[in-house]
Image 1 (spheres, one colour):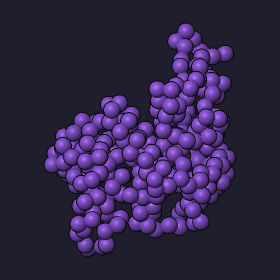
Image 2 (tube, rainbow, N blue to C red; image 1 turned 45 degrees about the vertical axis):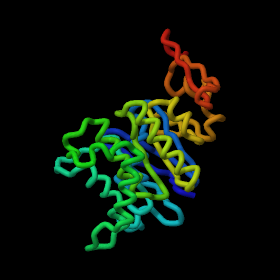
Image 3 (cartoon, rainbow, N blue to C red; image 1 turned 180 degrees about the vertical axis):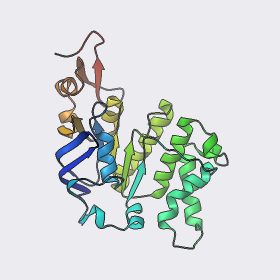
Length: 262
């Protein structure tokens, strides 16, 4: 078991996000979280990444309560690609990716040759090596997001949390990074928990889908079981058809522009 959330409550001033949310995520799966804007997807990831604390309930990571895990130890277990990454300091792209190795580097020590090789390999595979020496502040939004994704891959953790991690990217880079991530799930047993805006991308890469609406889990299970026209219509209020697409070897949704589902 990667995560267990029991009876979680959380809210912002004047707005309740979760009242009584429970969820179990097993290891070795690529989870896609899907839902309309404002339904609590990012907040759910923030709670699992310990960026926010629930007002009630408990979150367990493996056999431990999440709050009991030391910060550096947690960084060796969970890598995060946030929806928005802001940095005002003039780090190079290479330095940002190397930050992913910091949880593995002993205190007062310099990066080892293994750390350097890991960063080099990750930057090559993510096509970020080309701007290795450029400042992160000078990169475009999509380029910067690729660097942050590369940092998470360099962190080499058993769990990755991705919050719309490819939404600012060209489709070729999005497909490459999601393929690299899925490869880690299949070969290393990495657990990936990712929020998607593109439901079809989620269906292509995720073996498990979680549909959210109004701060609740509306449907959860294997992608081929829960990804249906009825589920999509009930969550997004659109007319939809879901069918198997041999070209991508996955179920895909088609949407009708003529109106909302009743």
